[in-house]
Image (cartoon, rainbow, N blue to C red; front, side, top):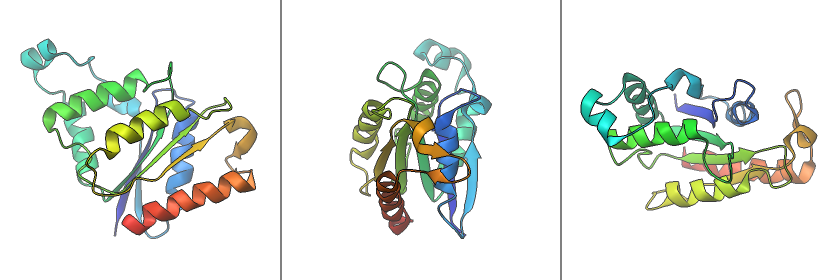
Length: 177
């Protein structure tokens, strides 16, 4: 059975991006789903000095191995000042020190959402550009604007046009699994 790992790239305990990544993972039947919480992988801020003195934190090794053992990855990006959250960037920095190949050309679905009208599209574009570089698959993306207006946990995406675009991105991801 295929295994999908999904997470919101935020450390907020009320993360709408985690909720959105869970919703996205639930679009796929017949797969094992593992939902990660970045708070379970808290570690020192990456620096070469800390790496040389203490080595790679066990949390980074665990996160790295979870991704490596998966068949597909879903990430929903939160945007802080137009960029990745510190929590995600720190994990990304640490796991890239284990091996430069972080995503292993696995099928991915990249998402973002916020309560703003742009839906964290800036970070999504940045993430897609970085992650898709020399990636084997065409990585689908979807940004959900105005989360509180366009989403609820019971019905999912409320706007029919947005839901259609989202499901198209999910289908592209599924074809690569």
